[in-house]
Image (cartoon, rainbow, N blue to C red; front, side, top):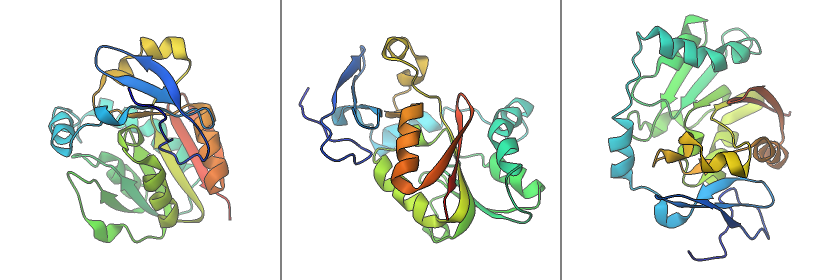
Length: 216
């Protein structure tokens, strides 16, 4: 596979190196931010992405799905002021998370490039932005994170749910990387780097939940 590769998070003067490979894809890692990502040749097309997303079976009346989302919602709700304004970015076809926050008295906008592609909501400002099981799909995470940062008020919260890279050995056997639409994989070091880059305090809530507050 061709080298060198530039870091999708935009790290300057960082020569990314091979990290792993399996029967499907090759992966590289940035030595600066520790982001692991697929080689560009393996990025799925928009049609391939949508077909994969339509296989997901997340229903708004599924108590298991609600319980799953509450693992992000509860710690974020504990940090929000009453009647805050939020955006669920990458909400998918079933925006249950937005409903959870509305039930607590917050106003919500939803956006998804495939299922709710309303660019009008991408104006902000928002007091909080949620991004559950979406950031690992970003083909250009530097660009997408910069957009979310522009939409977020000072002191606001960016809440992310994604499984994190633990080690190179465990990555090789990791089921999470086998989804063809998962193209970027973040670790603790990666999120700390993002926090430093954009000016956020980073809080690791669970092994797949990160809350980041934008420093005023």
